[in-house]
Length: 168
Image (cartoon, rainbow, N blue to C red; front, top):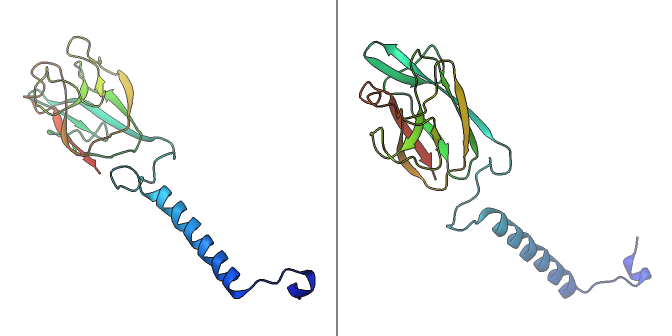
């Protein structure tokens, strides 16, 4: 089809102008999509739903308590929990022990430490009883290394804690 017959002929400079405009618009879209405040690209999980993480807690022996990703594999200290900044995660704590326990993220190994990021499942005065479970959702905004702990007095000393690594 001859565009010149239909009055749609474009000069070379007009064609170059259109190509440049398309490239500029594409670059702007890519910049908006990948450059967030702080210069970080969004994580793939943003807007993609919620990751689910189940943490089991209980007694390993009379003098050792722990956490695990399976009710049959509790360790003391518990396994590392790895989260990502901006990734929504639902954390469910299931007490598979015979005693009450809790799970909280903190920066200290103390039962009365202030919970961080709104993650406190059970409290020192109202822990999760045997066979109980509760959940909380978190969207970490800060990278770093933290702890997860049982806030029942004496349980941290028996090994009921682990590391939380939040990747940027």
